Length: 159
Image (tube, rainbow, N blue to C red; front, side):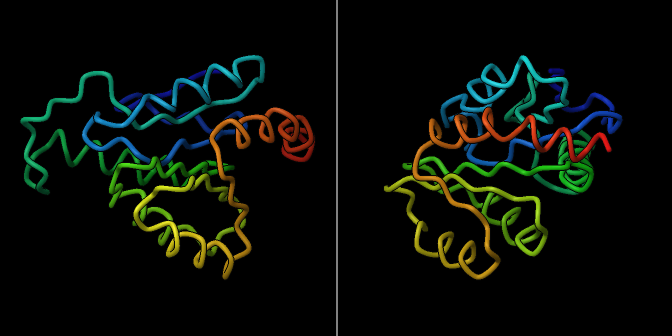
């Protein structure tokens, strides 16, 4: 497994998973590490938007080159990923994750984890129901299912 974070180039030569979901300006748990560690035995790329050198002083405007680069990296990685994993952590608002769900819900490569306690769980569940997106109640369940089903996904990808 190779973990790719911004601003590193996006490598699309291997099966890739984008880890979308709660970051909350680094207030959310580092759930991306849990997923990456669980999948380390697989020959895949994991696109992790949680930037190591994030600077909260960056202005969230199109004029800020660092912020502009970050958002475009995320959009590019989302667009090239074979699978998008979205995690909505309870206790967070995750507006960008909600946006990402809206942008990609009509694709057939999204899975969602939305535990009890996420403030817009009902909205997430209705969108997922409408577009036949699998929803997991816990991150542990999602990770276990990924570990079990990834070999089959990789076989399909490598044909």
